[in-house]
Length: 330
Image (tube, rainbow, N blue to C red; front, side):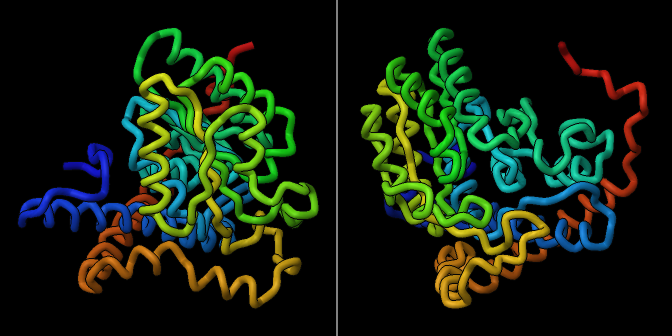
């Protein structure tokens, strides 16, 4: 049984059920590990000058992407942000396709036209990421409306940061989704900072979840460093959306271990704060549920997968100049 086929973490007793649970727990860890090691590898390649552009990395927030996407079906959709690597890998974009896209190669998931901030692949249910803050919060309403009009039981999930909740798009999208009871799950990755600005400096409402109440939308606050907590909240929200009950907002309290982008030295954060969150690393939290031997095997597998992805990206062709207009609509 694949992770996405599971309804809940708890299974009936018995040896086969226990084996299935163990495999599922390992699969969740592997999903987070792939994101972490992908980001570490990409960071080094960027510093070495192999990867162009800039990077907004996902270290520390892996439990959110994996916990949410583990619930979603292949035909469910997500929208993402300028920090999309983790969302892409969790939703099913291959490491090869993601890496080649960062290299700007034709074999990338967006044919080399998107780069780091615009990863995505409609074939796995991910719109190319929208780098505008709050940009996905209205686009996801369109996805949800289409699903409702088609009378499908699909769900659309929207990832966004706490900083996006001061954008008009957040409020407009949330209100429309609520009134129309659209099958949407709004996932706020509250990592405390919009770039370098603490959330408490720009909002007198300490929890994003409180804002949902103004629109009659149920909301939950979860530990965004624990993949099982994120998944449990998402399973409830997705089940509600599929039955026509409308949107749910999930606020995941999390933390990015890196700067906002590669030029950010994080001098606005204290050492104590960083140490406190590092102790809650999603890989440590969930890794405590696994045997060390299993972790070592997963590490080896991920390392091999990323070695392959890098070589694939390096050897892939660049787009031809005439391809710049392919897939462009005015």
